[in-house]
Structures are given as C-alpha cells and as structure tokens.
Amino acid sequence: NDTALEAIESVGFRKDSLSIYVNPRNISKMRGLNNSNIKKLIEKFRFNSVEVRPDSSLGEEELYIKR
Image (cartoon, rainbow, N blue to C red; front, side, top):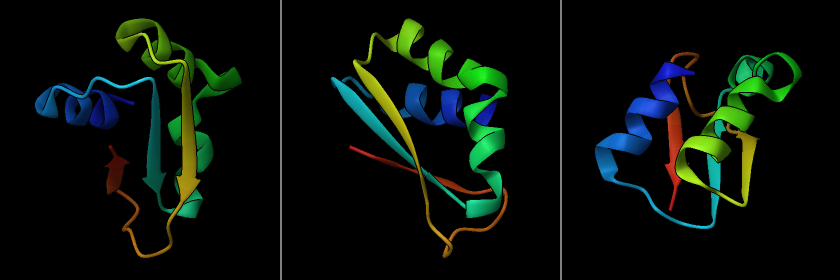
C-alpha cells in the first residue's frame, strides 16, 4: 500500500518489527493479495515481521504506524 510506504519513509522508521493499524475493513487491502504488501515492506525495510492490526477508531483511508 502506497500510503503505508509513504508513512514509513516520512518518519525514517527503522526497527525489527512494525505494526500497522487500519480500519478493520481495510485489513485485507493493507495486506495485499497473498500478503504481497507485507512481503514488499519486509523486503524494502528489512523488518523481521510486519503486522496489520484492526483499529475501528480509524477512518477507511487512515492508518497508524506504531514505533
């Protein structure tokens, strides 16, 4: 997802793992087909793991990245 990529790059996020919080309706969209978006983030930023977690307080076009 381009939104997540831009958010990670804008804060210079470097850590072993990453949690991305999205509206529950957008979990599969954030993960991508066969987890393709997760795989891209792991490859690009060398994370050990990336988790996508639901947060119903977020709008459908919002995301929150936990440091």
